[in-house]
Length: 145
Length: 145
Length: 112
Length: 112
Ligand SMILES: Nc1ncnc2c1ncn2[C@@H]1O[C@H](COP(=O)(O)OP(=O)(O)O)[C@@H](O)[C@H]1O
Ligand SMILES: Nc1ncnc2c1ncn2[C@@H]1O[C@H](COP(=O)(O)OP(=O)(O)O)[C@@H](O)[C@H]1O
Image (cartoon, rainbow over all chains, first blue to last red; front, side, top):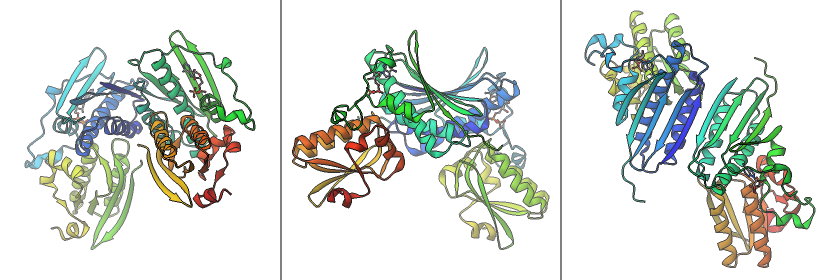
């Protein structure tokens, strides 16, 4: 198991650094991940970080860092995004209208969590005393090493 | 002031990730640093991390992470490399023979700290209870923003 | 990497080619370009996403918002997108139903 | 990025072109290539560093070690290096005094 942890200021300008680190830490150090799965994970992590940064803005804790932890294991890669915002209940989010429903286009936001749920193999939102931890897991195919 | 912190396993395979993060965190977020000074800083940080990783190997604390902290301020960029090795006294290192001395070529190692001292504007080695903190500072020219 | 947009005219449509990454940091820039174009009377927009390196849900939101704005002003918005990793996001969110992904600018202008 | 080496022959010299990054993680690989070549009788070496993306003190140490090994075996080692950011490291450490940096493989083979 290898752990790479990144702490960033809660600012959108750092999202691209997060993606770069996920790419480098996982792309080069977790052989066997396909580029497509790595892309999926990068989008999911970026969504989780965007929400974390937004949560720090909403809670006016902009001085506190957002933590991104990558855990590389034999059979899976886990990325945790830890924020210190006010938390939320993921089960109480408004569901999006069906894709064919004309009202679907009213929704310019609220797409992040549905994307995460599709792109990652496992997603968990864990409330903490002080914020939220989003855990994203992508499975790795068995490698012959 | 912006702080980006990276924690890596004490393994040489992660050195290239460290350089990438220094490049991305400082190159894109600290305007005004010339590419040449950024290169200098990247080499100095890489040398400090190599020593930190070596120190963890020597102290058999390979499970403990090495921490790289980038602090971007108006007039300077600081990178600290924090290890949990056994520490050392930088003033007691053997001096290299002069460049013109034929014995100079006997020295295949011991080049890292002399490089850091030349490449960074300030270098400090701070012993801690538990390891060493190397602080590397590179000045930023005043920007007109 | 920054966002960069190129604007050109093809067959009466205003083509906006997007380069770089579209995320929370850069989407406002893209939104501004699109709002300005519609404001200037260019409500028939083709958004070419084939040079995009990254796009997230904020990017999708920006596209929806521009589509609605274009239609409100009597125009429309058409998307060029053949990169599977970008197209995938429109498919997952069902947006490709409302907003078909076209293979190139000519197809977009032809509306096919 | 990994280290990659290409080996060719020019005018009786064995030219090793190094691509990628030379650091603690990859220097052992480079060292192995150089040791093997000298062991196989190719003690006249040109090390072309112009395709290197990164080199640190471990890389410098590997160069010194290969130089000594080549000389012990009746040969020599010559460096091609025109990238200022790599050349700078040889200058700072004074190694360019013992080991001149040459502008290209032809100059290295000519020994000029
Ligand atoms: N880490 C978080 N902390 C607090 N609230 C969150 C967090 N993540 C998501 N949320 C809430 O869930 C909502 C839906 O998130 P999401 O699906 O990503 O869409 P969007 O961010 O576009 O609103 C957010 O608007 C926010 O209210
Ligand atoms: N962080 C550190 N912890 C413990 N010892 C260190 C550390 N950094 C440097 N040293 C000691 O200083 C010596 C010289 O370091 P350096 O000049 O980088 O050359 P090298 O690493 O090639 O020996 C090392 O060999 C090591 O003994």
